[in-house]
Image (cartoon, rainbow, N blue to C red; front, side, top):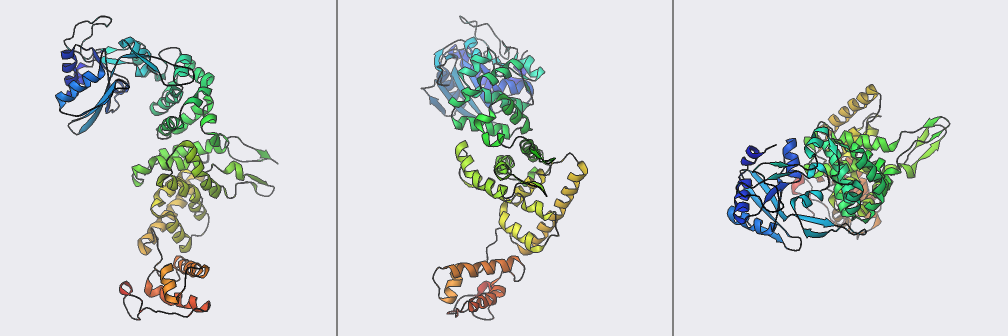
Length: 506
């Protein structure tokens, strides 16, 4: 198969070909770019392998393109970025190499090698394909003569793409023992592409799963996040489970699995329920409402929303199984899980924690007469994360009974209309009461104390209950009344009759 015409559409390849020929270096684009080219998938990362110095070729290409080259001499690699039209490409150059490994490390011992050596070290057949980039370079010792655009596919990667199979080029036991992260990558590619894993390859993952323990948590979590973001993430998690990897990297999720029955009453399998919720979040129809920055973290919220159910599970002879408080306990667990997973302990963690804590609130509103007070409290507590919370709660409706699901979704529509209407009217998103602790202390001449907090809470609740509007004009008389109830005499008062926006203490 020849990709000459396809390569001509990107001038970067012509520049690489010219410079490689001038230096006398056989050069090939290899790996993920070739795979995605064959599959018609977008790709902006190009890996170039040459027989010789990848750094030398990178510097020549960088000079020709007028762009800076980042050189990593310890690894024998170099990288540059170049714009072609409105697309920025990242091109990495490396000399062909062969690798060997020690049993206790996934860091290879690297030696110069041939193209065959380089393709042998690749993780999967679909990532071992290469395309020749030379035009005029004649045969070099040890390398086959190829033309610009020729496909080099020693392990039938093209056939595996057509069959939708993930398969290692060499013995999978050796492949996974050398670099155990490849077990995660096999499942990640299967989940991203919707491929099956070759039976011999999958059996090797089962045999070798303990080797994942030598891989850093950061690298494991990076692959796990890519599975979480795949089109149908439950597929990847089921593969992780059956391969024996999930128990090693995420035991809290495994603890959700199973159904217990007492007196003929059972509960749903919360492991498979969680995976269904994750898929529902991934496949929801209103993705535009969620910031792209929160997409990964919304999916993590789905993974963790019921994570504390095993710890809170109780059997009640009258009502069956209960999981009271699992949302609060789960929220308290989130920082520890993020810390273990080496996930960021920042606003992303707090977003997940908030959604886990609040995920039952909107569901409760669909089962009762909705009061303005309850809606206000949800608006205030969810703040800017309301859309994510509602997406999670819709996803949490799982049942084999289609009519039951549709009924709950219609109830959610009603709740969302009420939320929208109250938000438009009361502007409660990111609510802050106009009566602050400072104003309370200045009004009554108080120092920070329990009483100040109590008065502040009364004022907040009065606003949320709709007793008074959140304006100084409406709330200040109530503040004075609450102070007098506690025996406090106002030391300073607001000027009467002044517009609320201009009121000040006198």
